[in-house]
Amino acid sequence: MSHVFGPVPSRRLGRSLGIDLVPFKTCSYDCIYCQLGRTTNKTIERKEYVPLDEVLEELECRLAAGPEADYVTLSGSGEPTLYSRLAPLIAGIKERTDRPVAVLTNGSLLWDRDVQEALLEADLVIPSLDAGDEATFQWVNRPHAAILFDRMVTGIEEFRQRFSKPLWLEVFLLKGLNAAGIQQERIARWLDRIMPDRVQLNTVTRPPCEAFARPVPLDELTQAARLFGDRAEVIAEYQTVHHGEYYQARREDILNLLMRRPCTLNDLATGLGLHSNEVVKYLDELLREHVLVCEGSGAGAFYRFAKRTDDDSAPQ
Ligand code: SF4
Image 1: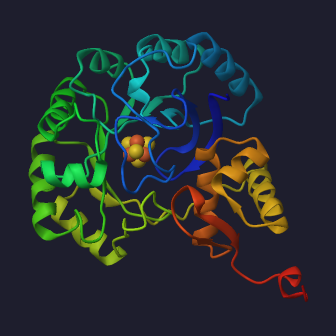
Image 2: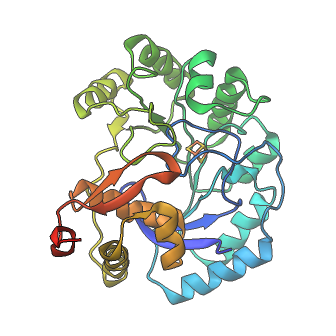
């Protein structure tokens, strides 16, 4: 298993060197919009899923090999705060690089004092909040039975009070579920309590885990951003493409494989020896550029070229 991937292009984090701390797909949630497919190990057990020494050794190699990253980001195949050795990990990263450490978390365990202590050493924490009440939380995030809405959201609030560095809150809006006015108002009330430095609005742009997880149009996202106030921004319309040699080579690899046959996310990741989170970033760009189309949903979704190629039009 490879624990370090990228750097991947990220609008929010520039060139983000990812660290994956849990096996695919270990998470405390099973979000209906998850781009990685359904959670196969829904848990709140915190443990050293992958050996700390191995992760740090791999990080050292990646840092030496380049290209340079803007952030080292804890993210990956599930929820990074399930990793029990977060504190020595962050300390180890900081011994090896002066790049800031970002943590992308679903926020479900921020009530846990050990998680809080460890994350206090990060430079940027980005939790999620997709609901303003218990019923919507259960619908959208399908959390582990031990995580109730109040516990989760007050955990984020408590962590915010202790964490003086930047905290950006991501809100993922879904048509017909949490994007209705009343739902948004409930989320807005929690935002006023939590006081994140930024609120980042997202919606479905990649094949979701469940076909009924539908995107919110851009104009509705923009309206929601107004309701959430000055600190809110829409991040769903991700347009940035990095043009460096490293990034172009990966795009080419993906296109070359798709030239031969349509592939699922897993086919591409396995075929190219890349982490699925890395492949997803390039697919995102290629879908937005209308180079590719995606057919189907969940783990079985196929990617193929949008335009018919000579091969496609050749008689069978
Ligand atoms: S979107 Fe994130 S929090 Fe939700 S199931 Fe997927 S990995 Fe877990």
